[in-house]
Image (cartoon, rainbow, N blue to C red; front, side, top):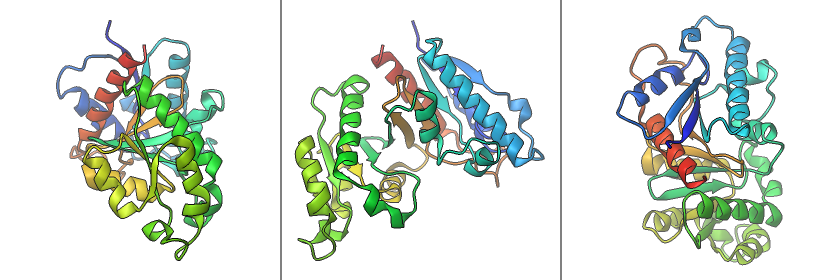
Length: 282
């Protein structure tokens, strides 16, 4: 039996409804799709809080379906964080919102583009707060979540992890900061991971197939690597949930919504990966 996917359309003012429609039209998908939300609500005149309410409620419904076993995975269209906040969904992003809806489980955000898989140790926090948030315990927790997902969803029996350094040149023996030696090295040792390795080389090595995933200390270093490696084809996967959640790697693109020019490539990749992970997780 083909897996069932709940697909939310995201912010109705954005390109979500358009890219979902286009992605589904690109060819047969080995999955049954349940659309959550209505494209008829896609009106640029909607107030932001109304758009946020529609998008947030669609995510709640998709998670309900997944927890009830009525769907095997969910794919979420792009949302506008400020609109969600105005509607009362006060989470830094959908990753944190999904964690709460699933019972406040510990999750990690993975970005994937082709052979490159990047797991973020910290997500939507200011850069100045990153050093305090990157603890040995948090890195190890993210690594364990990633290992489990790589085994259960990707079928990799012995995942090979690498840890991206926080400082330039992995701290250069303490010359550029001691966090890599003091915090990240013990985490890498506990996980049996390579590193910490400098950001300017670790992603190249991963793209060549040396690692199955790279743990990165902060949002932009990981996001940048993935988008350079496969812009328009990358996806976001929430690890640690009791069901797979996949999303395209782009935002709402309010500036081009309604013009019919949005690229559905990332959404199509998200749908295909969600179907694959759903099958593997059964």
